[in-house]
Amino acid sequence: MTPPRTPDELHRFGYLGPRGTFTQMALDAWDAAAGREQVPFGSVDAALAALRAGEVDAAMVPIENSVEGGVSATLDALATGDPLVVIGEVLVPITFVLCARAGMPLGEVRTVGTHSHAWAQVRGWMGEHLPDAVYVPTLSTAASAAALGAPGDVMFDAGVCAPVAARDEGLEVLADDIGDNKAAVTRFVLVARPGTLPEPTGADKTTVVLFQKEDHAGGLLELLEQFAVRGVNMTRLESRPTGSAMGSYCFSIDFEGHVQDARVGETLMGLRRVCAEVRFLGSYPRADGGRPDARPGTSDTDFDRARAWLDELRA
Image (cartoon, rainbow, N blue to C red; front, side, top):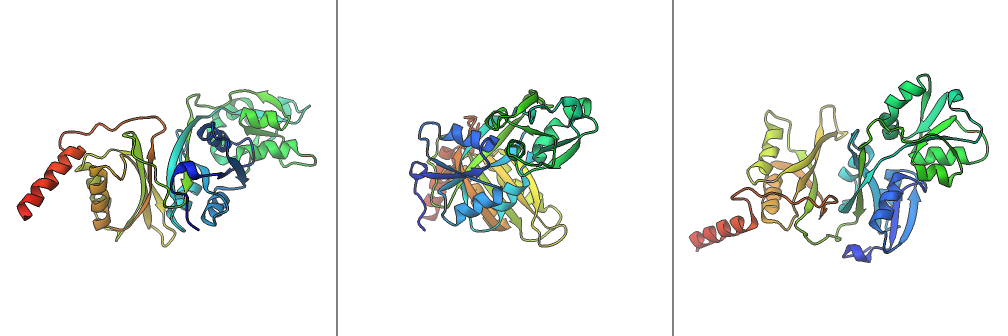
């Protein structure tokens, strides 16, 4: 199936559901004006599998949290399988509430359902107010609210979710703003099939996954030098197991700039020489609008002049 050539050609969006997740909030923010079709999926893997199969044109998934770091399910799904590319990102401030069915007093809550990342961000509040509560994992924060809102038995007394999820399910809010870090933010990425590449804006980010040829002393330094010598600033670096053997890791990296930038192109070529595989996951506008501060000798003009000088020597 031929992918859309530009982000404007995307019509059907998948996202980590059900309705009321922070992921849907991110998708709403990205698509506020167009209001295109949204399709919820039960997991990150399911959303990206549907994208690869052509069932949706793009998928919004969480990739990083300011408290918990990278979202393993997303990082691993993007590092394997048919290639996909990131074409946009959204930053969503995270606010949690504790909700329950009507009539459940706060003091009688013994079990709490939510997503693992959400639980990690409310542990302090739980330790102070519900120290004996047992955590029950759910596929998403909204899934805990949906379970409480549906008729019949449920495996937990209360849930931790976004305020909108509690409201949509008609649940009673037992406590507002229970996150331990009031400045918590989650970063979401809009992913599409290859062929959809946003134009450079001057405030861009590029994501790659690097696989080493072999494990040896200085191997990671060899990779990092490709960025340093070209003045490319990394904004995220995480290692993830490849699953092939104990101690085998790949590196998921975000860095400033667009593949069309000279220093980024030179960096990618350098990485391609020293890595077993470079999985390019896209160049896209930064959600915060931050622009790289190219140090002397690393601007596009500097690279162009150096290339022209070499061409003259060769001629």
